[in-house]
Length: 255
Image 1 (cartoon, rainbow, N blue to C red):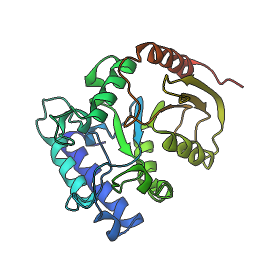
Image 2: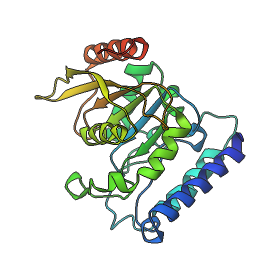
Image 3: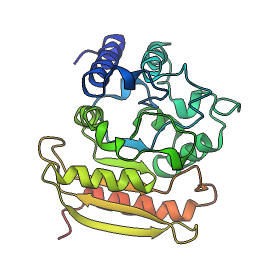
Image 4: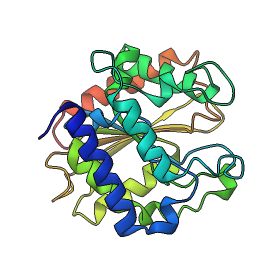
């Protein structure tokens, strides 16, 4: 596998090719984006993050197309080779706040600190959207597009070979279970932990390896969507989540 700038360029060209071949030129010209992480994260790793879709008003961000986003994040991925990997969650300005200081960015960084200990670990995790087209709010999301964009998800999952996928929101959690069944997977364990927000739950499941996709069992961790779920002050809950996560990753199948 090529490394550094060559690898990032290869990832950029692969994403452009996949979008054009499977989704068409019309889609690549829509407001949206694919990855939140550097293209250097598209390599074997322990974790992946699946969000729902890019936020913001597409009418006000019409120039920020999926094609532009792919090119922009390539440039960010190759800037400053000796620095830490770029991350949209940490380094970008959202909603007019300082870089990394929007509500969602702060919450996903807190989640990462609870689970992994350090912000720098978040920079090394491949993080992507389930739907690449931007919508102003959740009501405008077309969840049927999860399946439409699957060829890109599939490519990224095969590249990373994660032991754990963290989903932000229940829809990506349910979608991945459904897709993995098409690869011969099955759920062998699921635990629900109260999220201390109404009747919301944090879900943790272990699935048999999806044949031809990932060559090991996968743990899927479903976190309530961070646009509405406040992570701060939930240290005790995430201690339980982290304990269950570690146990499931190491355990044999629970039949």
